[in-house]
Image 1 (cartoon, one colour):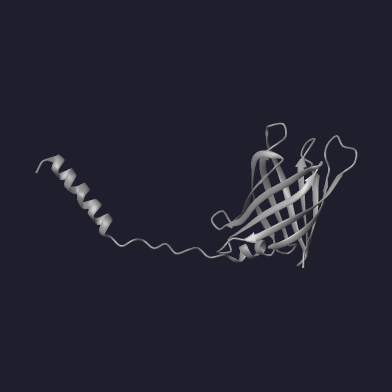
Image 2: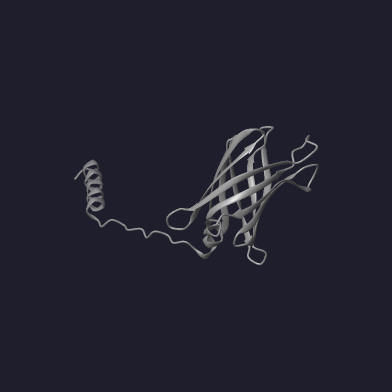
Length: 184
């Protein structure tokens, strides 16, 4: 038998074994205890926001509503936030989960005030019920930017969310604070 015939026979044998072999059944992953931390935010929340914006003498305040849903399987929380900022409707969407390989909480965020996707990862401190994330995004100047978000659970129906940016060196400066109250 020629080399070409041997090669073709080998390929045919491989294809035949692929077609006739039993399909591999992959078991669906299940939610871990770390996912429960995020699931506690499921529900509808009223939000009171305060933003500190460079160049403005006073902080900007606004009210909003956040609705968080648990994706089937319990591993992802999908978030929708709506408010009004500077006389315009503001809508943001996030998805948050836990990556068991990196052992980090992860998330993404998009909103109507930016054409850029923000990505985040961080850790949870069970003693203080605080989730701290490093946020990577593109700043208003078009350059890559790293900020920090800190979400703290105060009770089953009250939580806070704060963001910080580095300005003038290595000092973190608070740029936003949100107080959430769960609707009944």
